[in-house]
Image 1 (cartoon, helix red, strand yellow):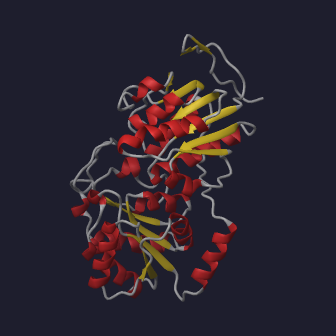
Image 2 (cartoon, one colour):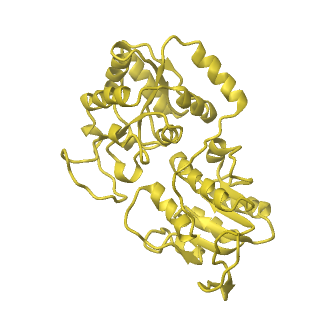
Image 3 (cartoon, one colour):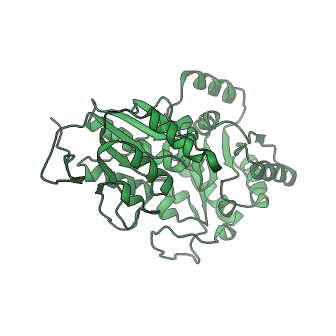
Length: 362
């Protein structure tokens, strides 16, 4: 028999001394950002390992669903298809119609913004577990009736693990299990089988301009990957105009011959990362996907704090730390931004690539 879970309610509040056994149903609320989606996966796996008969539902948005579809620890996905303007409330109405009538035994609210808070409020649940009031933004704390305790600033993955620890579940070791389906494996084998050299996936864009590196730096990196490391560069990015313009400028500046794969869909991106010998990326979803797939990744950090959002527990020695304002700065782990991408130098990136090829051959 598994350990008890406090979920009994009286007048809307949880009683610490009242317990039931393994919950029949759990709902996860986490909507967006691919990096955060990756961080949810070890939570799901730990829940399913601890409570194998529990039915787990995940409320999320289409991009996150695309990454996690078919995941072994999710029994059902409920998609929130966000609309804007006057139709915004229709998105919530459609989700409400899809929710089960019977309350979930446990709702885990992993996101701290109003949009997710509203959904947490709509989901019927006996226990709604969320962040403490200090971290819950946009009045998000109003939508939960049980809070995890603040333990100081930590890596985002460890903050998600606080939910498991609150429930008496050991989160370690972290296991992601990003699904790659049989047809994707076939496409992967055909693609990489046709290449003469191992590949380095170079991610050139993020959703925030402040996180992006410069085209001149990437152009030099591509040339070194070919000339000194014998790697075939793959240019990866999203479908945005900003990524397309960045890719065109890099190709114009470099004498290397990268394969231009910018704009590929997310599922193809996953198996391209999985099949590569190395990944170079700023702080964006593909970096965390690569880490979850255990592919060596050189992370370019300047805008976000690598102690908080760097690759989790591995490849931290491959981080190029432009976030530090001077070498060896002992800055704290906190959700603060800096204008540090200009401190990411070509020399530092090439040094980390050489380290990766020596320490993590693949």
